[in-house]
Length: 431
Image (cartoon, rainbow, N blue to C red):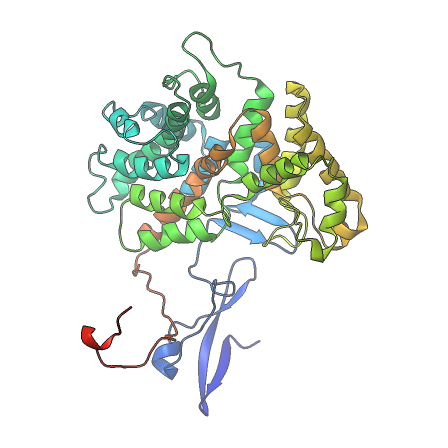
């Protein structure tokens, strides 16, 4: 098989190398295309464009495969934890006992926020969106981190990455407490990462939050399953910013802003909003299911199907089992959860949904879990951001460690006016 692709433009043939990844995915290297032909490619949305080579995450959407650093997501979900998985993503290998202890200790040492940052929280109105606060406070936190604004230093990376990963959950919990007018709950070193976050969210000065193992495990799984997902919008944003040699906190803040968009990080929130809409209409889900089959109805099942996975979302299989355990453990009576179960049953049994592979995805189950444990709707995307932080950090490191890194600078096809004269004010009309 030829290892080049031939492109014929204006009677000239251009040979472009074919690059093959470790899993057999093939790409055409067009880095010399403009120089050789004067043309560029146009791929709006980058659906067919490889922007980088990466060793971090592999996805095969047709087969429903997701692997972090080569390890199947199913194995990590069963045997690992969010923090061990974060280490794997960032450093490329599973940690031994000593490495994991060091990494965990670094997170504990850096979980507190500088006391002066409390004044920054006070500057936000009570109704401020937590994602706006999260992005702003990540950048503000960098001002209190020695050396973070200096040039990238591999020796300093470990402590800076640990600071970011540790403090992001503290910022998120503080933002939630402030929005509710509740006293801030400081992190406790005796708690592990996810349990500590739940403590900061839901404990009171007079009463500790009941850390049910099923709930802690469920949220840890949500973090783990969202830890990385190849070159999605927010991760690509982080890499784009990193290519300018910006610091790790600035890159993460940019990732938060990209994730904030409803087409990216808002999917699990959309699930609950759909369930609320069904409930308001007095429907138990049956009418909505019928309407979803009718293209003219405008009704769409949120949390079903996936742009990448043309088969069942492998993360959904994992989180469904934990979702069932959480609901059983909490013994919650919630009409929205009853509707969700009806929608799930329809999607898994109805031939209409099966033929179109509209299976419940990870957003469907994670949304139900978060509602069940009391996480408010506006915090859903924040939870996503906490989980995705290891992937952003890993991609940041990969960009910064590249020996011949270049600043990302996409081209465009200009479609505006051709050259035209400047029109004096007197000739522009009276409107």
